[in-house]
Image (cartoon, rainbow, N blue to C red; front, side, top):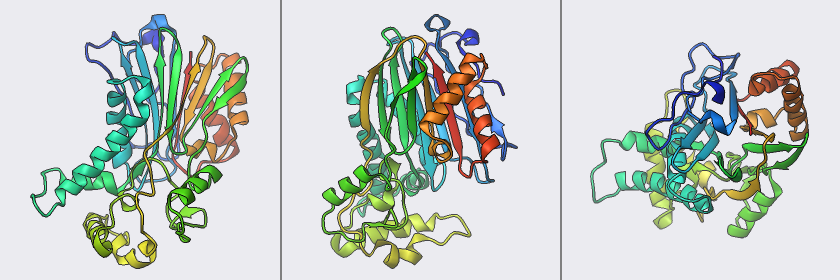
Length: 349
């Protein structure tokens, strides 16, 4: 499928925003896919967006991306989301977060990240209160807690080209200007020294917090949505947390060892949640015509550096390749086949 740029965009919708994300995995395992983009950006803005994805294994791809344009505010929100433990959280966040962000100025990004995650946790806890019955959506609400997702969004005012980014996790944004990479976001996971320092500072005297550079020896994500295992309260003598884990284990897929069967070794050091935060690192940058932006999940950055990726994309732009995301992924895949889902968005301003 060929990604659509603004030159053949459909008329602007009357709805406040449109979104696009690849959810089908039909016959795509082991090959590069260029999803068709449906976000209707008026051609006068001259913005061109390319997308490419790669799924190395049979389970449904857990990555998602989103493109949402509000014609009233002239705001474009672009996002990439790296799911783990299933696609439920990344799917939900990719559809819900951009629409929330569009209702508030970019200065409120952090607040909206937190509010969305709080709403996910609240829905699950409400379903399992002693004082009310479960809702009709209780399994869906539990799935959003059982899986998790990082999120990286770029919010662009298309009239002024002012850009604001928010990053909760280890997806990465790279901005190329004047032929070089001038900005990149920091990967935020349990291997990042600043994240390790933050966790130790927020949870002092918890010696088993980081084991083998993973949270409790298991999870690499330290920022993002869902992952209720590492956010839900302990309750009296840990009984409330154990009850929640029993519920989540009851909806585990066949063939997987449920967490309640591993509770003692996994959570013996679980004392002061939450250990995973949805709070993003944020920043602003004034974009200029001719800038090129790469946004990708960590499946790309496990294989290639920022410098290498920017050089490939800039070379592709100089050679007028018409799909820079696919060009980048093809070049990388020729060197080493990805072992993780990969999603790449390339934005030409």
